[in-house]
Image (cartoon, rainbow, N blue to C red; front, side, top):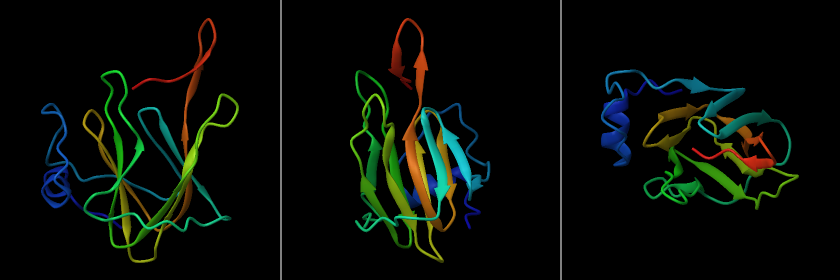
Length: 138
């Protein structure tokens, strides 16, 4: 499990965050369900991911569009991520498996870092209903 501070994570992964975030805070670790902005991370027990996440480069779980920021998957150890193409009826972004002894991280400039304990998770976008259903924008 992670016990990194935000400063330590920025130094390790070279992914910075906005200045207003407290860099001395210890990054929280999720092992069941968590949320970072418009991305949900939900534990699941079936269908492990198979595509290796490169530790230094990471993988953009959600790419910043129209001025938005990217949610970047990073890993200290081994992790696997199989991306999916979300649709209006299926908001799954992909399946993430963090290997035993490893820690995954979801990094975002506005939200900081969120650590992810070993296990298998589905990453999912949120949607909102205003005049019509639409994907939540960060």
